[in-house]
Length: 331
Ligand code: AHR
Image 1: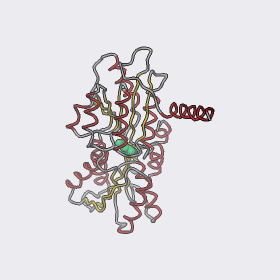
Image 2 (image 1 turned 135 degrees about the vertical axis):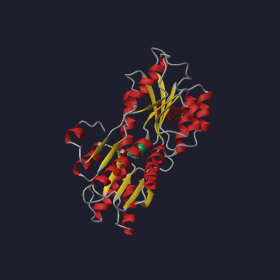
Image 3 (image 1 turned 180 degrees about the vertical axis):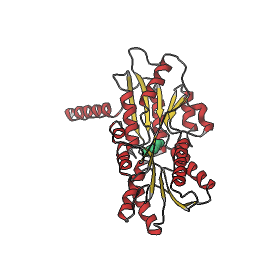
Image 4 (image 1 turned 90 degrees about the horizontal axis):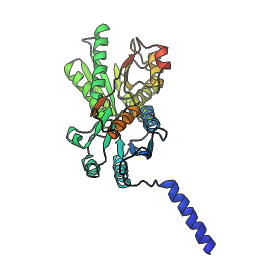
């Protein structure tokens, strides 16, 4: 009986050690002590997201002086809020998080502030009024990305002599309420408001995934095939939309087919761009880990930091892309 009780106790001890991480309340990291960082990631909905997670993990590595506690929120904001609260209880030195949506963070960020834990936001933005609760943010200017895409389309339409023709547009939106969706959608909606001949024929959410967009596009094509442009708010969506369009017998290319516009510029999507299936891919750079490391190290040394850092991003189109550009791609 005693033996059995001891065995159960031993199993419990092993289980507890494996599942939880004992982190002492932060007295600030020192030279010999790793910097403890809690990282709340949205999930793994896209290739972009996976590359973003990997970038943070490899930059905030043990060898680089960190103890990283990673939490995957599996696409739920509640899970992110819960993870941030746990990081606060654990007394981490820094919290890094990528907010799924723009709103709903005030209370938990206030709690981090009261606990004296600096919060570094990556990738997406939150509503402006919450900004005082954030120590630094590193990410993309999604509105600018969208504007690059619509300006490219405006130019192409003029070059092709279609400046005054009716242009029928499908907008496959990203996760609703996320900064990436809000900025990219707004750029297209504003362009449509500027051009009386541009028409939004369908606007639906593909949730930044290939699978959902494939279904959305399949249903869209049952209603109409009279489409000039499919504006996909990330690469996963572009691939799903192309799958559905090709299955329905539509050609995707900038010359005499449906013009597919996308965001991210992942290696796989750029291969589609080289083939002409994606006409334009506006880069969204997920490799943000080195910037996070840089900011934390500066804060550790008490040096001033850049509070808002937008990463430089480029764009690729079918007319100018080369094989070499794809080979050098890191994600
Ligand atoms: O917030 C960045 C967006 O989120 C990327 O465009 C998308 O692929 C990701 O899931």
